[in-house]
Length: 122
Image: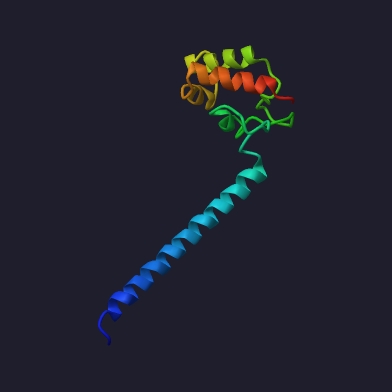
């Protein structure tokens, strides 16, 4: 074999591996985009200017009234959303997961999210 052939073959394999890895990353990104878009998980009410954390609400809270025990947040009073989040955080309101979720938000984040949802049309 010519000198350097093994090294050239190794470089060729590494390049192919990198291209395969990049293709997998693109495929996973495309699948996630389709999945999240299809189920409306990205944003409940729409605008791209949603505050940090607002997208996490739409995983459970529907953007409009549907047959579910979980209330929609769009159009609700900001004060009511803030009060509920404070009650969940303090353990004063029973919940399955909201008590844990509420603890992950600062007071400022809760206010921004509540104001944003209150301004959205239901």
